[in-house]
Amino acid sequence: MQKLNGKNNPWFERRPLVALAPMEAITDNAYRTLVRRISSNVILYTEFVPCKGLLRAGDRVWKIAEFDDSQRPIIVQVYDNDLEAIRDATSQVAKKLRPEGIDLNMGCPVRKVVARGAGCGMMADPDNAADAIKIMVDSSDGIPVSAKMRLGITNKNEVIEVAQKVVEAGAVQVSIHGRLKAERPRIRADWDAISAAGSAITATVMGNGDIWSVEDANEMAAMEGIDGVMIGRGAIGNPWLLHRTCQALAGETVDPPPDKKERIRIALEHLELNVIDKGERRGVLEMRKVIRNYIKGYHDSRRTWMKIITVVTHSETANILEDFAENGDDMPLHE
Ligand SMILES: Cc1cc2nc3c(=O)[nH]c(=O)nc-3n(C[C@H](O)[C@H](O)[C@H](O)COP(=O)(O)O)c2cc1C
Image 1: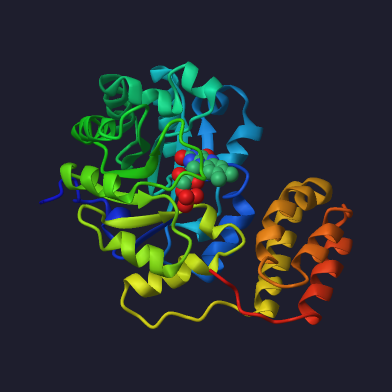
Image 2: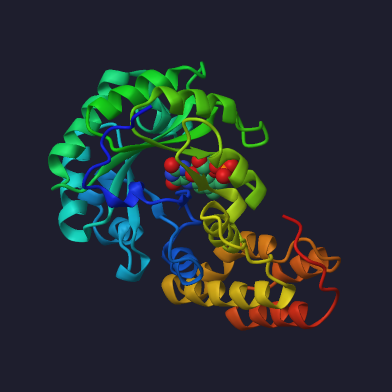
């Protein structure tokens, strides 16, 4: 099917189309800087940012949305239920930050968010979702607007109506996470449902959910109606997956997975960036869950993890990681 809305919007026209999914407390400034050092092609998303927060809270919330120019192309993701707040926040983000795109979150399943009609709650009222997108298009000063949504609230076909309405309202791209609102991450994402929706929608579609390897990405990208892939949890502690996926989808030779020393070299860089950004204590504590992924797959992973969770300083954490890199086995990563 001929997809509409492609003109003058280069970020989602690029092929291969590979994105790092927006993830709160993961796709922060530090991680985006790191991913960009490894991959020049992948599209980055900020964590989701509340529109009212941007308008009222000032610097603390703006810090979530702000990015360094080196991170481009980058999409700022916002969420809210209040159309006026969506309009004003879009206008300010466009003016102050000029990202390559502004995305509206229609997928967050958190009860408090959904109950007030934001996040996945937007999918309950497709016309309102379309109004929100229209308002964003009108206030984004020409910056492309997109939406990220789930398959639906209770029915996997809901996405088709919501997506088509937001596309008619001016969204240039839709990302579809292949789960219903209440489906937990352990339930496998339904790629067939993403493909069916993608085939029915006249805009660029990125498929999202359960891409853990280059093979997964290849498989999803080959499906009808899916123009690109968006990788979330699979990229936590594994920024190489994004770069290797770009290589695979471009038909290039794919780098082998990194060895243990390289994994730890990058984990240390990530830790340092996080500490610079958030201060030592918060930077170290927030990195713990991510470090767990960097070190997984080795016989001494668990022992190392148990040490990591007992320390709170940058230098102690770094020493444990350096010791892990130098000693023990060097089994290749299982993807
Ligand atoms: C820790 C975490 C935070 C997330 N935060 C956001 C967010 O801010 N905005 C959003 O649209 N989705 C968010 N998501 C959902 C992901 O973008 C993605 O849709 C979901 O994880 C499924 O993809 P995956 O199977 O590749 O992880 C988050 C997911 C995780 C695990």
